[in-house]
Image 1 (cartoon, rainbow, N blue to C red):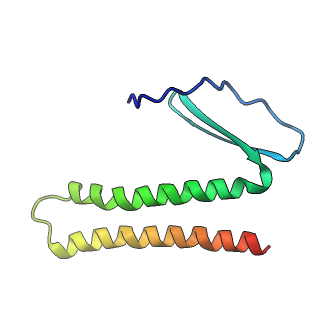
Image 2: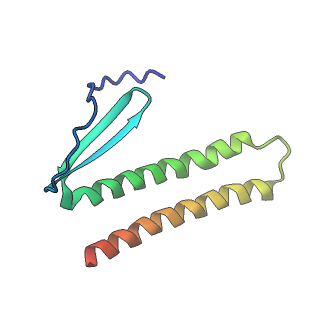
Image 3: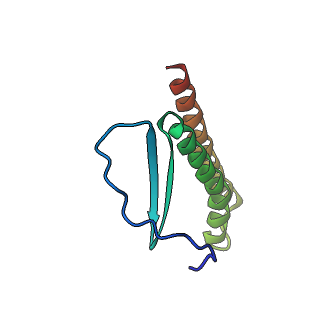
Length: 107
């Protein structure tokens, strides 16, 4: 799939055996990679934001894809149950992220 986004070739990350103040988050898919570096004390905010973004996209795409995959003639109650279950799961994921964030801030 060509998205039209050009990403630089980051190569392999250099091993870092020494603890420091910089954290690195590397996400690889197919032949592309995203490398984010920042202060280690703020990395949890980046991962929380990414988790919420994925949950939001999943909350929108999940029911939409499920409705498209259900066969014709599916009872309305079954359709509502599938969509409702996916939305409940989304609420669970988002709540878990917020609870974890609150616990890490108070610690």
